[in-house]
Length: 315
Image (cartoon, rainbow, N blue to C red; front, side, top):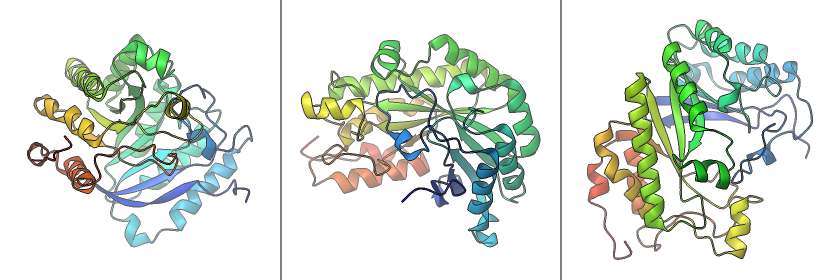
């Protein structure tokens, strides 16, 4: 069935650590960067088909109109995606984005709006426009930083994000009072052992915390264990080179050394329905549910205590 250009890919409410969250994934033209080696999200986009400003406004209106007023009244956070970059004006025109922001800004409990984007699409004037329309609510940008190691970030993952560009972005956000959420991947490379993958993740999280303190930037991390998405580079390595996704224990080992950092960390355990069979993170099977539950609880509480108490012969 051909998607309706006047309906979002996804919209709905979920409970997050900060309260009720409204998630909207716009149906837009595909990511115009399109080079990240691990990503298959463009498969959920309109490809090269142009989705106009009016269509995107209609998507925003549809998403909000489909939810009960009493539910919208308790929304604390709004997260916006589009299988690319929300701030890429060629795929999501600024007037359409402002249309959404003006509507959600009227929600009485709204505390924060988070926009998913690549760094190169961030413009100071657009940030000013967004903040002016949000009023008392905070603005956050979600950026795929993935790894401190430049070789891994740009040669393996092909993010196209230099450390200088990242630091410049952080300085800009700090000057504007905009928050940053940085995505960090665990074991995105077939060459990494689980032990080395955890060490690389810890180094990245430490670097993010230090950057926030240096610049006075409010920063958090979203730690994502890699999964094998259909059509991605990892699928080729999974089938031809024996790539094994990280264990859930590797995620725990990526977190425990970071207790002293004071860095808020969320753990992403959702494969978005894009993983191939056998291409997801797990343990021995006996402890999987228990460790998953502990990681989900950590995201809500930031309490490292229960993670330290986890055990299993497979560890």
